[in-house]
Amino acid sequence: MKLQPEMLKPHHRFAISRRALMRMVPLAGLAATPGLAMAQSFADTKPKPQQLAWQALELGVLIHFGPNTFQDREWGDGKADPSIFNPTQLDAEQWVLAAKAGGAGYLVMVAKHHDGFCLWPSRHTEYSVKNSPWRDGKGDLVKEVEQACRKHGLRFGIYLSPWDRHEPSYSDNARYDDYYNKQLTELCTRYGELVEIWLDGAGSEGHVYDFDRYVKTMRTYQPNANIFADTGFLQYGDVRWVGNEDGYAHEDNWNVVDRLGYLRYRPAEADTPLRQGHWFWHPHAEQRLKTLPQMMETYEKTVGRGAQLVLGLAPDDRGLMPDVDVARLQEFGDGVQAVYGDPLLGRGNNLSGVSGTGLQSGVQVIPPNRDFLLDGRPHTHMAPPPTDRGMDLVIQLREPVRFDRIQLMEWLGDGQTIAAHSVRANVGSDSQAQWREIARGTTIGHKRIHAIEPVTARGLVLIIEDAIGPIRLSGFQVFDSKGR
Image 1 (cartoon, helix red, strand yellow):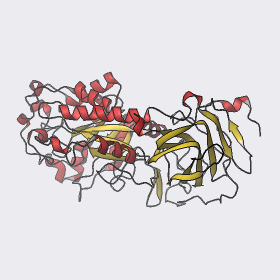
Image 2: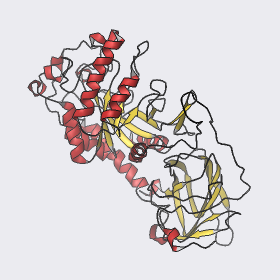
Image 3: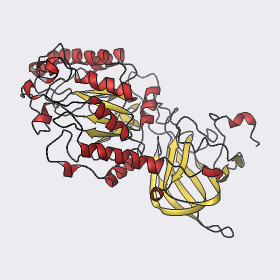
Image 4: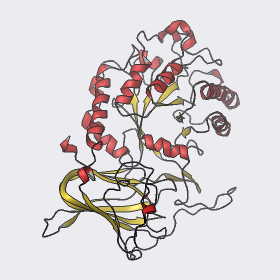
């Protein structure tokens, strides 16, 4: 089969087949659910455009700041007097610039934590910044942070805790639903478009929330926002908790989850604080600040396993991010860029060929100046015939390349399907090729990073060994972490 000029457009799906010996696998997860018109499958469950846009951001931050900051506490009881909230040097732009330096594409502001104290002047409670000395009671911290985000190019989201240890109506489910929904409406209508709305399930055991009502409010006023919650806490969310606060995702990471027979596309968010075990600021806790190697490992075990990384940041009692935290975020942003901002395949036109092999369609060579597979963008992709459940992709190099990181990307617009893959490298000389396996994994998803022992290779083969549906590969690249 000869490639035609129109097939070289960046968004064209190149037809590349793996050996026909790859067996067909049935679509997993078929389950009928009452009220649904038809059965679902994992392979056919597709994301919404706003979910794909959110996944492409890859890294965000979650800001915790409030009365706890001034009490050396993680868990407020709702009894703190509003007068203690008085940061004298608060600078929301400093927070946003620190987050941006760390590589964040968005910021989620904790507008109300479990203590019930509101960082905006809510009309529905007196327990808020309007009764604090900060800004003479005329301040709106949510607004200040939102405006700083818009100014510096970060998307903005909010966190509104369902659990409220201050509000008297909390003991009455129906009354509290009214209260919570009114506050949710304020936040969804005052602060522009939201990229994410964060619902935390902590402390909610035994309480019954009217989530149908909450979700209707969110969908009415913020139809493009992604709703975050644990899958056991909220069935209708768009984003799910990864299951830990340590900053890692499971190696086998599917974006579709099965909720009692109801399948939903819900990519994982891995939230972890910048200071180990501390979401709020505490004095004299600099020793808990995570090291740069720890943060790089966290990146590779979250973003590098197809999940979203959200770092917990905590301004101090001045209202500023501590200098050491700001410096660490800068180091982290620089570190990620130093490793993953310098792709090696295609650099200096070092490719001699990119090809896919298969018995059905023969060998098809993609000219080396076509870099859509190597550009790191999730929107361009290639695919074998839709019935194939495997593929070999061969990268031929003019000169040997040294690397210790492999990055793969799957195009997710029609769902996630790749279930098993491996990578082999040609480490031999011109006269004697020696191919050996250097990486193996299961899912790819938005992004998969393999950290390996350094290898110098003259060629690479990516083998898609198994898939539950049509294969759509978006990226294949290598990097050298030691060469920065």
